[in-house]
Length: 287
Image (cartoon, one colour):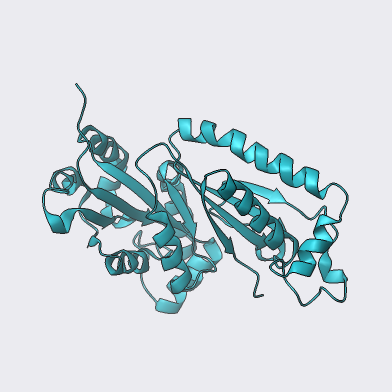
């Protein structure tokens, strides 16, 4: 028997404690969603049955975290039950580096939900959430995000389609500031000469035309850009087949201001020209 899809959307907001779930829920509320924080997991299927039946329950965001205690182990089974109900749901997993999570708990003096030494609690929680993170439609690294940037990323995430179409995000970054935690594919472009060491280009970024001109003149640049873009296009059907609807591609150079910025922009333009839904974000360009 075919289960009829219900007219409604559920976004499940979860992830590491201290990674920004409360702020994410506020952003969803600003975007017109009906938001509930820490709904008991056992009640999710019953609540999901109401979504779509009332106007104010057409778009719903649920905040779920480790405070669910012994019920959390049943979360994966509950997600499978939502599929049987014909409900379209997406999982947004918020993450951050261990150092930042511990710093946030220390600054706020909040008790970690697991009730242990903060460092030990963070390690245990990361282990407990491994499977859930793997099932997420979108992982967002909030380590270096402002509230405005988080809301911008969530807004673009709402464009996730119910079809097999994949939404792409291309991020430039600097290796000296760390690889983005939410990256699915990472490309190191430090094989190209660094414009930083060209005096006339040092204070410019990859958004400035002279930097692009300089990089395009480098041996192998055009072949690299073409072959890497084609490789991404070839991988997309395989990711879609595995049920992934959102892919984050990270392009890194030393400081995240010149090479990675320009190449990320070129990849975005090439993918967009091919009809793909793609967004662009330059994490470290202002550093």
